[in-house]
Image (cartoon, rainbow over the protein chains, first blue to last red):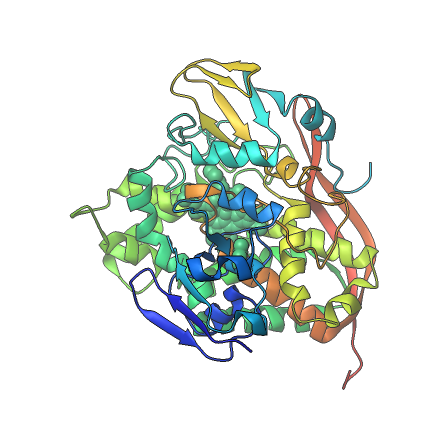
Amino acid sequence: MPKVTYITPEGERVVVEQAEGTLMSAAVENQVSGIDGDCGGVCSCATCHVHVDEAWTDKVGPAGEGEKGLLELEDGVEENSRLGCQVKLTPELDGLVVRVVGR
Amino acid sequence: MPEHADPFSHARAEHGWLNVDCDGENVPLILRLKDVRKTCKDTSTFSSDLPPLIVLHSEAHVRDVRQLPIECDPPDHTDYRALVQPLFDRAKNDPDYMESIRSLVDEMVRTAIGKGELDAVRGFALPMQSRALTRLLRMPESEADVWIGWGVHVFHDRDDGGGEGFLLQSYTGGQFRRAEENPGDDFFSYLNQVEFRGRKLTFEEKQGFANVTFAGGRDTVINTVGSIFAYLGDHPEALDFLREDEARILTACEEFVRYVSPLTAIARKCPHATRLLDEQDVPAGGRVALCWPSANRDESVFDQPHDVKLDRSPNPHIGFGFGPHNCLGAPHARLIIRSLLRSLCDRVERVELIKAVPKVEKESSFTRQVGYESVLVRMIPRAAGD
Ligand code: HEM
Ligand code: FES
């Protein structure tokens, strides 16, 4: 399972070795500040908003349709915005870096 | 009428809005998910500064305080909300609190199994909601008995449709005075003591916070829980389906909130004349309303929107609202619903439905089911060791 680095809104780097599940669930498991995962990962609450590091946007891929609908109206949305719960962690994402947007 | 039918599909496809006559005022309901979201975000065109008209029909006969933080706009809203947010968020970030709700719900499920025939609305959902709220507000559990006595909706739970007048306000007013004399770590004592922009809250403001806390999270939770029991009774395979995969507790909770959408509409006021969806003129000072249940059945967003899919994901519903005013009690409501589904999976083989009486809301242009008046069920326990 991949290693993922979260940069929290406070600027802290939280490294999760062996991250499992989704970018959201791994963050909640490890109490990464700014990712709450209120809706349990069904793309309803947007409390898992991250900016994917430019070097990783291709591998992570673009947001899906339902996800875009939410992101469109979120504060702090960028080209590289994703909802963490919609990004499944696969071995190809080993080394991934994301910035947590928070509220 | 099929249960939980969607009365808005035609208008949603045709115009995206539906007019409702609210005591002589024409209020267009906004029906499509994307439009509702946009309206929620645009707080200067669509203001929440409209006490006591945040719901379709004025509540002037049951309260004379501005409900906080719901009936105001940013930047006031931001600061008001921040005062109470930590209290509500214990339902998602305080493990002890979360465990206390889980064990409360589990104990209530165990007791309910032993009772045989039971009305899941008044015999289960109502007491559960009240007892869970005592824990959120750090009040003695015995206080729940008083709240249960108020009925399902504290503002209108009488056969004649009349309310209990200012019952809620006089109760919460009494609690603020009690907490003045005898402070503790409860919600009322907290509001008495907390500083807002360098001053204490006024009595009116405190009453406003208490009012929506008691009224907002009551029939919504009860109607959702009643509907869950009716659904499980109608779908004997559902609990087995949930048991197959842990993650389904989470997806099922969201799907029930989407499908039931117990809150029909919440209003906004337009300070300036506004043209809605390029078609409908709203005069300055006029209201529009956000129609959560319609948005949650939007065919352009949800695949087979009128079906309950307990593993639906993604499920971008807005049952808990959207934007700055999104539901403060959502973590608490989710904790209750998830705990209930967990306990039912652990302890109940199946729910037998004896009789369900839908609860229906009638407006000038539509009728919709918001939950059940009563859901008579029997819970069949799982055999030991299952
Ligand atoms: C299934 C249960 C519930 C549903 C479907 C629900 C739905 C909603 C919705 C749609 C809103 C948005 C209102 C708006 O945009 O103006 C809202 C706001 C609110 N809800 Fe809930 N609610 C539920 C449970 C609760 C509970 C349990 C509580 C309290 C214990 C609560 C307290 C509030 C408060 C205080 C607000 C106002 C937030 C603000 O203005 O910032 N709700 N709710
Ligand atoms: S956890 Fe709710 S949208 Fe991602």
